[in-house]
Length: 478
Image (cartoon, rainbow, N blue to C red):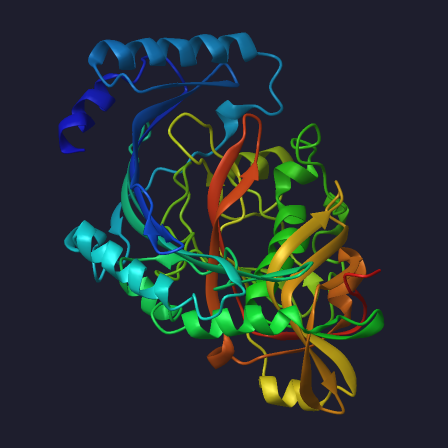
């Protein structure tokens, strides 16, 4: 990075109102073992630069992986050309935006670096855990894996901004599938949600070396379990399902560019409208949601977004009332509304857009056992396995890997093929209780898609168990 910084500064075009150059280098490696057989190592590396130019009130950008002086100069010329072509056609006057100009350096957690663990040791660990999944002849598929990503970025601006950030991410996976006759059931370690920033220490946070026997035994148990009952009932959701619920029915509908219609052609719009901000009752008074990219271990934590805005914890929903949307610097300028620092790009060859980051459900004060004891008839559901939500992020239907009936204040028999459905605008108003801070799980997903062209990015959510009343629940036979 030190070698390229001077080259980047020299590439900034003269005579423009504003310019930013964002350098990004990411390296990814993944190892996996399936059915006790090691799979080939997967490795990738990408390095490049995005140059953004504002001139004449319009904005243009261009990206390149040619980091030579000539390559950078050509990209800068293309960015200026595109800005000039956009003049008079832009959604806002970009020259009037007060672009951030911070200076900072930060590095995320990495207590047990991936690079210090040999390839042989990684495979040995995976083979040990994989072997512990094959506990029964009815287990027909079983696998474990670990992915590691290192990210190094540098943002330079013509207004004097310089932000260097380095982050490390670890993404574990563990899956087992059991079959008996016509029945097949899958159980996993947290679905796709058990990942955080950090090195190999992330595995300990989610019990990667202890949970294999439980995962296997629950897959077998599901084969003979009854189907989830159908009908309105109380619903208690585990944190590894709450991550999906928060993501789809709060995160996406509150992204301000989506509210403004930018995603309409691809990923849909939102049931939320501008006039709802500041007054709309999004949920019950138990619902408190924060944007908080300052928790070091959480997957989407950072100090500054890709437009250079400083990331700070911000209340999005408080006591059930929608306070603000997830709109970054550009969207804030378009609407005149407050937002957050969530302008992010998935790679150097994509422009930053409004993306949820760490969107967390603040803890409540009702322990899990107390929530169970308060339910006369209900279902407890764990681990997302399917999701469907309409184009306005309003009506949804979600499925979970495993459920347990709650009868007269006690967890009773296991049920399979658990599903529930609702409407975002009313579902959160049925929220009755949330678990305390010591029951919160800090989770994330590495593959949230949005944008044209598509951007797959890391997002995160923290949540405790949560109890909802009068939810439409149904099983696999409906």
